[in-house]
Amino acid sequence: MNKAIFNTAFLLLISLTVTQAQVQINSRIIDQKSKAPISYANISIAKTTKGTMSNKDGQFELFVENPQADTRIQISSLGYQSLLLNIDEITNAKTIELKAIAYDLSEVKVNASRLMSDPKKILKACMKAAPSFRPDKPYINKGFLRQSHLLNKKYVKLIEAALFTYATPEEPKLKVHILEKRNTYDNREIDAEALGFFKNWEHMRQNKAHRQAKTYKPNKEELQKLIRETDEKRNSISKLRRLETAYQPKLGDMWHSLHDLYKSDFHQFKLDTILDLNGEAIYKIKMLPTAKELKNGIFIRLGYLLISAKDFALYEIKYGKVQNPNKNGLMITGFANTFKSNFTLKYKRQKGKLYPSYYKIFKRDFTGISSSIIEGQIKQKKYPRISKELLFTEIIEEPNQITQMLPEKWNDKLYIPSEYHPEFWKNYSILLETKNEAKLREDLESDIDMKQQFSKSADSIRINQVNN
Image 1 (cartoon, rainbow, N blue to C red):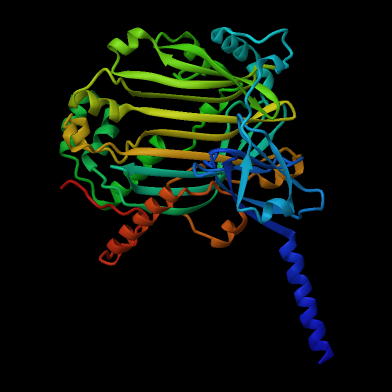
Image 2 (image 1 turned 135 degrees about the vertical axis):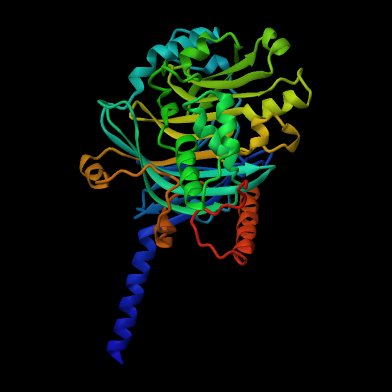
């Protein structure tokens, strides 16, 4: 009996030890006065490179391994007073309130003798300082990707992945490695004629590509292969050149580079305000369309830049193309909706260097695009879009840890089928879904489950519509 009691107590002690080895924090960040959610707030474990970000609803999840008595969690957001909380304070907190800061310009302290007022001069100084913020030693940036394909405000494909990027000072191009994938649902209506056109268009004239696409009759295996190839080429994550913006103002063929924005005639810059970030003054510079663009352009360009007043570090850039409100008509609206896009890119500072912390892009889905768009029949309103969010949660610079993590064979293929391991995700930091996103996913899951009841195929990529 004594032995049984001892064994029970021993197992209970082990259980308690394991429980304390990791703490899971789930909470919601809100404005102290309005009680509105604070989106994309930064949540980090103090004195480490680990952290996460709140979603649009202000919600977040964070895993803390082996918390100590002095472990602190820092909460910060642009324009709010930062908080530093201990584990006990934050673990049971359903909501965390941040106090908005009203900036008194007379109290702003920067290295320069005074604040600058010319937005183009601020951007020019940012471009000049950019290379100095590139990390000067190899690092791995762990992250989480959520990529949703939408059609008429519904999910038609969803894929989530755990991954990391690897960069060195010697090699400017990032390498991407996918660790695990989950929620890989696909309910798109694949148009073989459209895919055939895009494939042929790469090496022949447009009219000839159209003619050949009309007679393209692939079998199931051929079409599956073409779908994967098109997705990997057009929609995958193997090319993340935008993440270089903070270090390299001119990116060659990338239209969004700081150099191209500075030289562009499509918009003008306006110094909007000065905000606070952890006691640091931040310029907010708006990008607005010129009078000429508002009068003549089908698109207008909008966006903003967040730049440190202290040393001109680029903390955030948002830029996009939307339909000109002064231009209307069915054809113009259809064209604008087909080609509109936007992206957001955020950085965090670590030991004087800048590291990507969040990236989001919204653009068209070439694989799901229908031939009706190619033919100009925009009345069908088939504008498949992709929303891609990439949250980085931990920077790893320790050489031995990097060596252990680097794979023998790199995998940056997002659309190749792979095994799913539920245990992997039990303590992996993700960007939480909003209520609306969860509803869209549940609708997609329900739709696919219903169709699978009547499907004899167990293919990883299901083809719901093929032109015959």
